Amino acid sequence: MKRSDAAKWIAGGFCLVVAVEVVAIVMAHHRYVLMASGAAAAVVLLAGRRLLGGDSEPTPTERVNEQQAESMRRWISRTETMIRWANSTRADWDRHLRPRLAREFFMATGQRQGKDPAALQATGRIVFGDELWQWVDPSNVAYGAAGEPGPGRGALEEILERLERV
Image (cartoon, rainbow, N blue to C red; front, side, top):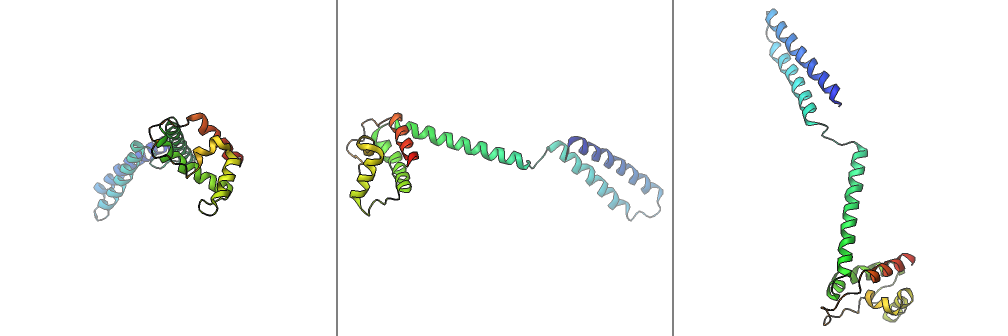
């Protein structure tokens, strides 16, 4: 409801309340006066609430825009976090990025980790090359080298580009 429509409802409701009160004074039977006064007052109150409260329900277009904006904020946040992990230590890479990248690799190539390890290694080396495959290979977690630096943003970008090409 627009503001001008709500204002019209409020004005009409006040006129209705005044008219009901005048009729109440003139009429001999006051049985229906209380109900009519209550209904008129309810119309005024609801229109006033609508006017002051604004639109309580967003339009479908606004809902879609809000959902898209929220989705974009989540994507940006995830991307920033992934970049921080890539630029951090090897432990962060192994804990957070390696499982995600391996899962994406498995889905893109149809490989399964336990089925044929030699085929998995060969496919990984073909897709990424020896240097990048060591950062995607799920069996290459180095527990003793946790404090070493991770490969960085450049390696993450190259890995993601190669995954897109698969």
